[in-house]
Length: 81
Image 1 (cartoon, rainbow, N blue to C red):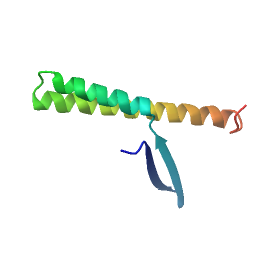
Image 2: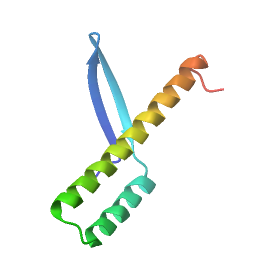
Image 3: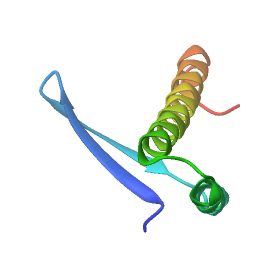
Image 4: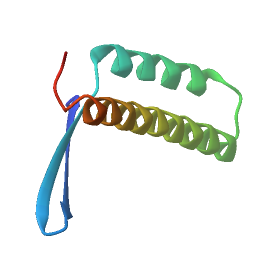
């Protein structure tokens, strides 16, 4: 699995390309969590719900980080100081 995930989204007739990078640390811990979840005595429904919640949590954290960085850069002239 690649740790770079491209997203393309047309916005106001412009093509916006965002690349989401997932570190090896994130991929490794996701595998560890997956193995732990598989060891739990959960029903299929409980397993699916737990996995869905974790995916949503990671997605929310990624969005928060992206928006926070974007807001920071926008507030500081877009450049790294």
